[in-house]
Length: 489
Image (cartoon, rainbow, N blue to C red; front, top):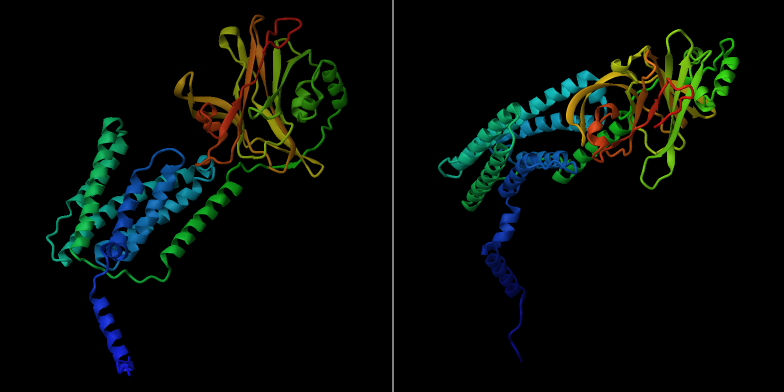
């Protein structure tokens, strides 16, 4: 008979022996490094610092990376905030930076910066405060490293953190003086070296066995990131939906009711005036065309995409008015034959037919309106703005320059049908050999994916480089001295 049997007591002794033995074995180094609160928190802070500075200016990375970087810094400093007063201050400053950054990112999805001057001033102030908070955060990082080194029994030597604060100060100075070229590359190289040194400093403390207990939180990191992302996404979506187009004063259009209107219309039609354009004229503009002598018309249809149908019709009408001095009323009319699918801001840029050398001068102010159909009713509205606009122009032909032109700025309703409108003005042609040369360049928004959101009248640089806006150039050109004047454009 075999007397060697397992007993409950023997089993318990074996369990105790295994537990004590395994408990004495140190966990593997990769696992230790992965779960160390100090290493996780400081890596988030340093990677966040890298993202907030190294921001390539394409694919909106100059907005995406700083936002990710700030969230990483927030998570890192949140874990370290009770380690010492410096890290606690760094956490508060990072919160302040988030409070300043998020509204600015949401405002970028609106055109309020372009249409409300005080908004642009507020955003400039927010940017200045954010830059100040960033500089102070680097000082807190420097003080926090030195405090941790003292606590770990190491001599304070956080020169790389001090260099980062100096680098931030130099960056502010360079931005103010507009430094470029070699200075920018040297600053970039210095920043990379400073970050490399900061990572080594963090690793040194980790290898010295410095440990922290992450500060307790009520909201997990995951929930915090999801919540911040949701708030930002909702704010940007609301900006695009409600504040990315001009507020227009739409009202039901009243039919022209002045005496003799039908007779005047018939006379203009007999001269070749297009009825579709005539129907859209206000009573005042129709009255100015009374007893016209001649009518010159140019009509063109355009596609807004390379393979798409022609859906935008531009008609230019020149009406010779009665009087002792030769005067022409020039009308630029547009009509969307089909909706392009998105409505943001649109504009018509005018190069009026005015040439002092040929005695052709502007003889009236610009007038006009926009119209559309909705639920069987014709709606009309004045232009959001109709007058001179100063803007930065950039083209492959003339380069960058500041200039001023007349713009008609407006937004059309997304649900409107047969959207159309016109602008008119009058010139006096005192010389028989002058040329009527009136340009009305139609600027439309071809994509809603424009960040920051801009307006058609001030984003001329994008007309030529595939940006969110495109321009269709259209003109009425003819010799008024010819008895049978015909457009030659």
